[in-house]
Structure formats: C-alpha cells, structure tokens
Length: 232
Ligand code: C5P
Image (tube, rainbow, N blue to C red; front, side, top):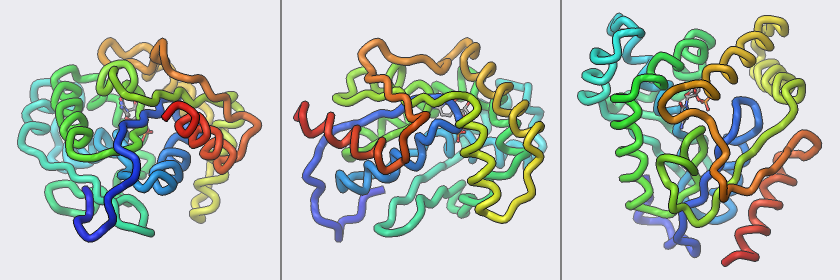
C-alpha cells in the first residue's frame, strides 16, 4: 500500500473511524489520511470485493463455509496512490467501480456476517496496520480489529441526513435514484449492521463520538485532526 518513493509520513499511528452507512466515513477517512500523509484503509471495500467474486463464481451467499473457502483463496489489495482515488484490486483486477453497484451494496451483508470470513478479513486488516500508519474506516475497527488504536472515532449523523448524502452522491455520479427504495435499503443495512452476531457496528467505549449531522466533511476532518494534534 505504501509507496517507497513517497516521503516517510510524519505520523505513525492508527486512526479508526467506525459508524453507520452514509455518515461520511469514507470521505472523512480519505481526507484525514491525506492530511496526515498516511494510507487510507476502506474495510467495507474489502467485504464488497469478496462479494463481487462470490457473485461471479455463483457461490451461494448463505453458504458460510463456501464463502470462507473463497476468502482463503482470494487476494484483496487497497492501493493508495497520491492524488488518486483508492484502488481496490481483487486478485489483481481493479474492481473499484464494480464494488459500488446496488446489487453488491445490498448483498455484502452475507459476506460480512460470516464469522470465518470476518476472521480472515480482520487478519488482513491487522497486517496492513502493522505495515504502515493508516486511517481506517468500517464498523468494527475500534472494537475488534484495532482495539489498541491510538485514535478512535465513531462518526454518526441523523438517518434523514445520511439518506440525503447517499442520494446526492449517486445523483452526482449521474445515477437515477429511487429515494424510497434507498431509504429502505439504508434502514435494512443499519439493522443488519447493528444486529450482526460477529463484528456488529458498535461504538468502542473509548471512541470519540462525532455527530456530523450539521457538519461538512471538511469540518469533520478538521475536528478529528485537531483532536489528534492535541493528543499527540
Ligand atoms: O462501508 P460500506 O458500506 O462500504 O460497507 C459495505 C458492507 O460491509 C456494509 O454493509 C457493512 O455491513 C460491511 N462492513 C463490515 N465491517 C466493516 C466494514 C464494512 O461488516 N469493517
């Protein structure tokens, strides 16, 4: 993930940002990583990438042992290149676009609820954290993956605002949006995230709660950067 030609980052820690879908985690984590000069780790992208492979291979999505076997023979890489969007490689293929389809978004919960798959994903994520300083975002980073992280944040926002952000995001990409369906999908994803038996979405006790309902992404990035600066 790191580029040997880049200067050493001045910051050598792990920052984690957990929270529900649409809270702005990706934008904030990406912006904060850039500001700190470290890698950005999008863990949702990893679960999504494995889902792409499972769909292509026609693996039954409720067959947990088959999903775990698939994960064990898969290589997922997150490539951080200066000034570019994060690239997600699935066995060497760039799937950065494919992982964002509605089908993948709505079926990734199968992969994410499989305990044996999570075990493998968590190991990969810890390995990335051992190799470099990073800002990671997901659901279980502060509770399961990096319980010892130096900086833990839980980013939340009102449901209506999270829906609107998703709608704006899709429209900005030129996609038609069925608002009622999107709201239902987001509510379903929340429910699945909060009630999953393994690695559910949960604020770590020592995570700082940031409510971004009335904040822009830049304001959130600034707020997190300040907290990090003050604690260093
Ligand atoms: O964050 P994003 O929406 O890309 O995550 C895709 C899916 O992966 C989510 O539905 C979430 O349930 C799951 N996920 C997870 N654990 C993480 C990150 C994402 O279960 N650490």
